[in-house]
Image (cartoon, rainbow, N blue to C red; front, side, top):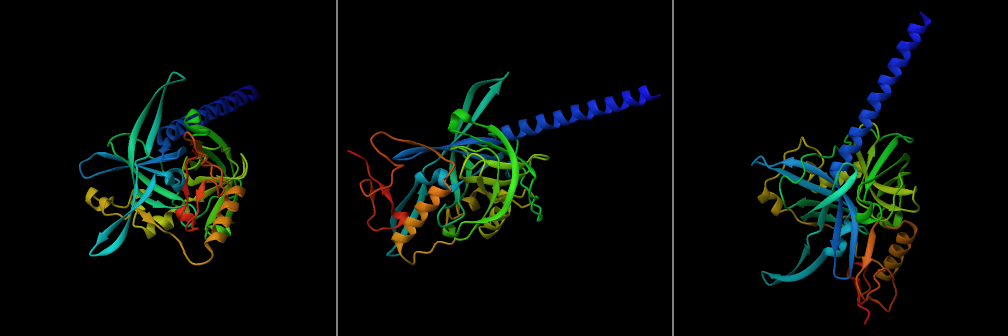
Length: 336
C-alpha cells in the first residue's frame, strides 16, 4: 500500500513539474513574439533600445501593431520646424521613422530579421515628461500576438518574481530574457518632476531601455525599463503611471483592449508631443546641470553608436552649442 501511495505521489509530482515546464515555455515563446528591437538612426548617432507590441484590429479587420518604448530611445529622431499660421509662428514637431526589428529563429538558430518602419504617434520626453513613446508599425498584420498589460489597481507585492525581455547590448542581444524580483515601489527622482519609478532586480544592460518587465506567473506587463544604476538595480516606469498618462492623452485604447480604437483619421489628428510637467521657468543652466547629474546616477539603458567624427556621449563646451542654454535646445556639433 505504501508503495502504491509513493508511486502516486511521484507520478503527481512529475506531472505537475511537466505542466509547469510547459507553461514556462509558452510564456517565454509569447514574450519573444511580442518583443522587438527599436533602431533610431539620427543625424549624429544611432540608438538601439527595446519595445513591446500591442495589437488591435481596425474596422477593415486588419491587425494594427502598436509599439510601446521609451521616449529617449527615439529622441534623436525628433526635429522642429517653424510655420506661419494666420500670420503667427507655430512650432511643428516631427519625427523620422524609427525601425522595428524582429529576429526570426528556427531550430535554435537565428535565421533572419524582419525590419519595419514605424511612425511616432505619441511622445513624452525623458527630462520633462514621462519618458514614454507610442509607435505604430506602418505595415498591417506584422505580428498576430499581443502583450497583456497588468491593469489591476493592486500593485504587485515586493518579492514578486519578474521577467524582462529586451535587446541587451542592442541587436546582438535581441530578445534576451532575464529574471529578478520586484524590489521596491515608488522611487522618486526629484529632478524628473517627482514622477514615480519602481525598482526591480532583473538584469539589464544598454539596449534594455523601452523593454517590458512582466510578472513571471502570467506574463503580464507591469512596467517599462528605462534607467539603471547597475545590472540588477534598475528603474521602470510602472504601468499604473502609463495608465494615467494614457488616460490624460486619450490613448487608453493602446493599453486596454476593451477601449474602442480610434479610426486612422482620428489617429492622424492626435498631437504627437506631450510636454508633461514641462516648465521653462527658472535657471536653465541649473536645470542642465541637474539633468546631467541625474543621468550619471541613473543612466538610460540605451545602446548608442556615435557616427563618424563626432563625440555625442561627451558633454562639454567644445561640442555642445548652448546658446541659449536650454536642455531642449542642445545641439551636438560635428568635430572637424
